[in-house]
Image (cartoon, one colour):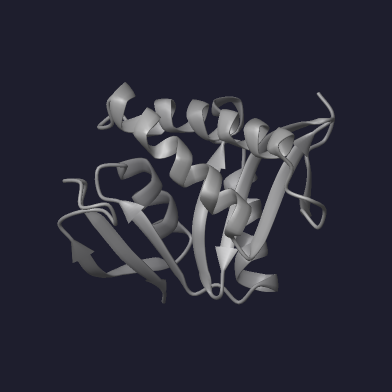
Length: 150
């Protein structure tokens, strides 16, 4: 396996690239978001595609020619961070978050309360919960923890 490289995607966010990243998202969500049904996941795909197209900074982690993770940053907030299951627990999430903190002045992240591993990861990275919403942005019964850097 080649060393994973991380770069801000400065090129066109083509349908091909977005499709590859949605594939990473799908695998990641199935691994980490056990509270979502297949129907929930399918319903989210158009929103994920739109977010990938519109997010201010799109950082992609590559293993050779294949994306294995990505992070989206808008202003001072991590809006999305997803890794291929094979990359979870390898330090890639820490590398991406460290980049967000050091180069993009990130202060905030939101996390599904039911994704306990992600919450624990962000706590480990120094984020603390300052607000909790009962539902997600679409009004679904998936509580969201709003976290900020201590």
